[in-house]
Image (cartoon, rainbow, N blue to C red; front, side):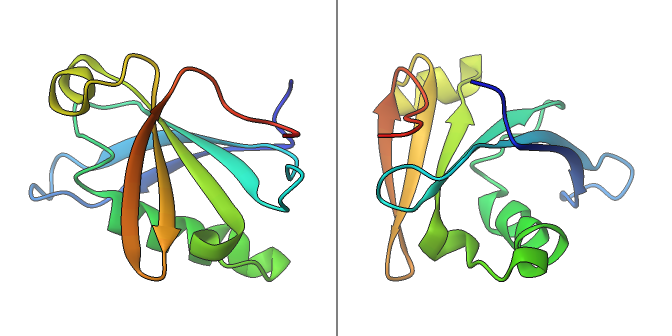
Length: 115
């Protein structure tokens, strides 16, 4: 399935001369009303390490425009890198859901669209 929206985002890291970059794909809402969001790193920085910053940027640059809360209305799928595979044991995606303000991590083989 094709994403309904795509965007590349820059985010700050510890080094001002090495910002992080991710590619974001947003898909149509699933049967639970949540929008699957795929995040793929374009730099050597771990999106999981900078997840709070990335979500804050996504909220202000994308989701505020359509009046949605990124934590309440999305399921985040972070595409695994070698570093993520070693740390989380997820071959394809690390799924991030929110229980109040607590992040809950799981593994997934595919992005669940329309389910």
